[in-house]
Image (cartoon, rainbow, N blue to C red; front, side, top):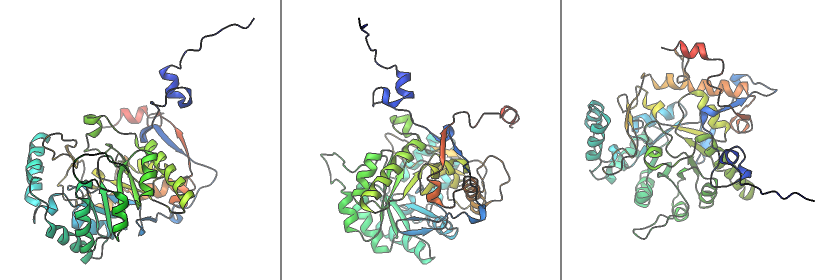
Length: 398
């Protein structure tokens, strides 16, 4: 006789540990602090590691991009980043295209007693209209100093700003929103068609942000020149708390990078992936590259530069919203020259200085001679990586 058995549905724990065991509505996702990179059988001389990458067909000597945040990147900072071999995006809907001199507003934000007061100042400041002549002047100022003019705007203003930016000589145009998708449902206003925009413009159009492989795949088919990965991971962003959306950056980057590889296999076109936000140390950046990123976009780490316009503060792009702010003003720690943040020397051991050197050393230890080879290094899930054997170190921190 065959014994009859009733199969119980898998427990929630089983579904998390084994995605094939149950519902597809819930899966485990990992952030930087939960994974580690595994050295292989080969190491490389750090001096022979190549960090060159391409974004929108333009060569970058280092895979570092400054975020389009008013406290991080203005025209002067963009020129400095370009001088170091990197890139900085400037926000076309920020303070620098609303005011001929934004310094007094930034000083008021920095002097505000708390984040709520700073938010009120920003909300008022952002009520001033964006001016086309200031957009043109900003781009021409960057170009006049021989730097890449990379600018960012939101979907609602993309068509108009793209025309102004192209006329002024912009090199890269980023359409950035909280969540980007190839299909946007709306019954009011003109809906942005990415395919139409990329087809009409003569400059590369980057798109962000996404954490979905399927959305990324569709955006690539619509002509995106590069994709930004990350929803809510930034230090000054509160989207995850306010709206409850987002995916940890390692899992998100892996998924979008897999879509990129699938798209390249089908079409022959390679679309760079940029991990945007959530990184503070050289180790975080190395893990982002290993997850499949071709470059990383940093906000608060660069806001710590003496050359950054934020005067030791940073605030999220959505902080000025008068009704639903999803960003906050944060005070940055120690302020250092941009060159030291990028290239050292590092005077501390917590990994926030000499970011380029840390990435180069990590790649050398892993046997990766360039960015593409870094995409193939072994990764492990390792939630104890930051604490294993560190009890004395953690106890002795001041």
